[in-house]
Figure (spheres, rainbow, N blue to C red):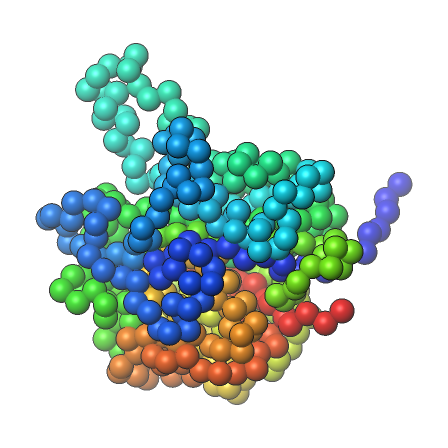
Length: 416
């Protein structure tokens, strides 16, 4: 016998962030609001000889503030970031130390893990012999350890899932978490993305692909989304995590609510391994709005994918026009916070969803910094260089993955 169940509404009750412009959520917001640049010369590896020598690094991060020293040594940087952001989100929501209720909280985390560093332990094994292989590679560097380490450290026994859909991953994770809670599989989830890919191989490989900015002499102005003179994205790192909670759970405990996660949409370009496709991207936005039950005319702000590559920014401009109609598209404020943080790859959707939420919560749209020369092919309302006050009721956050995976989420001001 089959039964029907009323879908739960899903609310955001906690926020945690580790970013190149702030090591926690309040400082991240202050960096966004003030247009702070988080991009500089690479320090996490020796950049000598690399075509790209700039990145958006997290500054002054001490993993032992978030993990026991022994555990910290056995935890890769991406998972350390996830623990810090996840713990902050849980504390922000007032659910840290919630005891029995933590059995009902799970984790959905997006990450690439240590994808660009796995060759190093292999080379070390070949040099020293198989019996000297590192036995902790999987438990330190496996992709699953972003979600697993968060849950283990915080004692969360709900669903535990890892997502990787390239640059769409962080937003993808939010959408999957939304549906798990809607369907009653769990009452709450920490969801978002974490990434720590900055290293010699990633910078060399993506640099050769032509995706990264080579403005090594002027890192502060290297990332310039939608600007006519943009020349590629800048690789960033960090984590952004939300506590998503069923409306029933949040109301029963009197939780502070940032917004409602009202809908999510996905699509795949099915065209090219690297080049974006506007029609494919627009489908994710259209499906997200349909899922949320909103009309395009209701959208007030879009936190764009906005990578600062020539192809992406033109394609996203066209996708916005296709999804919302040109008349609506020209009325909507748009910004790319990657101009300040760089591109967190699988983690991007996490911190950018937070940017969209804070914009709504504080009534202030963060700017696209380094916007100096308008591009006629990117002719929407790009909020330039300084924050803009605005009352926002519906905001979108876009993430479009290299390879064609696309995801979009809709946040709406919560009204019981």
